[in-house]
Length: 503
Image 1 (cartoon, rainbow, N blue to C red):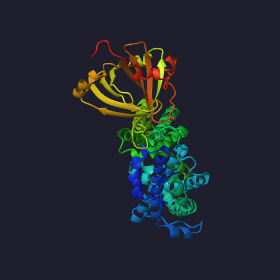
Image 2: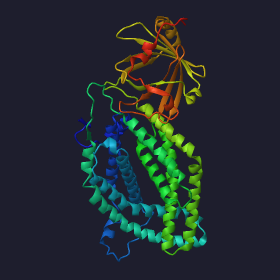
Image 3: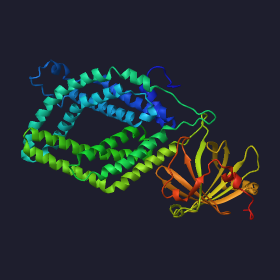
Image 4: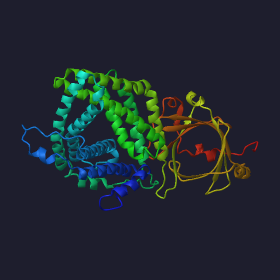
């Protein structure tokens, strides 16, 4: 059993310290830290929620008219801001619980999920009214004269709805959130970590789990964007908007510290804002229609169309650029998920495949010349490696590997060319020369090694955990003979031999 540092609730300060480290922690813990982060934000907003019109609204009979709140009143502004923070935290908490359900492995039961969903529904009316009132205030002067007059009437209708809805939010907190908050904190604060006896402890890092969730969304996002064919494609636009919300909820705690994650987060924010503007204009247009305000209904339809056209220009017509941003975020997360032992020592976990020849997709990639040599030794053999890249740059490394092929301790250290040249003659009895073509496919980098002193082509892919099993890409699969990961005959140290012409 792995337990969080404190037997009680983690404080906001604890979470500020721990969340930035979540990507490197086991997936079960990283998912819980992010969920706890949003739960703490929601709890803080709940504690601050004091709707200014609560007492008056609760004493009104259903037939009475609610007092119209003054938007300029600081108390009303504070109420709106607090509810906005609560809604953001609630929406992101629900998204994290949904997207990380596997890593949370049963920590959240259906009763809790139902309660959070009910709380979300209760806050929708207030949110919609606040957004719609803000939109009318900002855009009133831009509307045609006849629509502007009707907008004043619609503004009064929204004011009356907002006052009664605030009391409903308070009741929803009391009914749906207060009874579950302590239990949810407790259940998110512990988890079980299974370990396979006899193998290094290499739990899947949260970064790897998060990369998988982000990557899976890209294919669905492409499909949903293709379904957005007009301003009336409401279901497709709703799916895209919800997908972007979930992406932002997962990435928000790391967007400022990881450039590629931040770039995708910002792009998703712009897309969500445009789709939200379409939705808000649509809802207002429907309300105007039911309120018999035809001029305003027409004007709002034009507004929705304008936001839709902006979205299609930035997203539907540039879908490849959008998905490139997603792929870069996935690659950055994969880099963050390099496995380590319990002591923090780096591990190399890879799969190796024997190929019939170089796949055309790999041959099209300019190769790097790799020269490797092993210093004499039995229990410990140090490897030197010199890489000459396509642009002419040269890098030199020293390396030691220990352990089984499936998961080896690997320690790399860069070295100067002078030290490399001084040590290189000591490797004359055990060297390998090969060309490496690197093909990036989704979140993986497939290394195709063409040996220069024999008829041998191997493919390698580095993984982030023992349970990571990527499918062979279509461009590679036809050329694979078999998986040779555990076969000593294909270890580089075994393949090494004395060069006829020492360098």
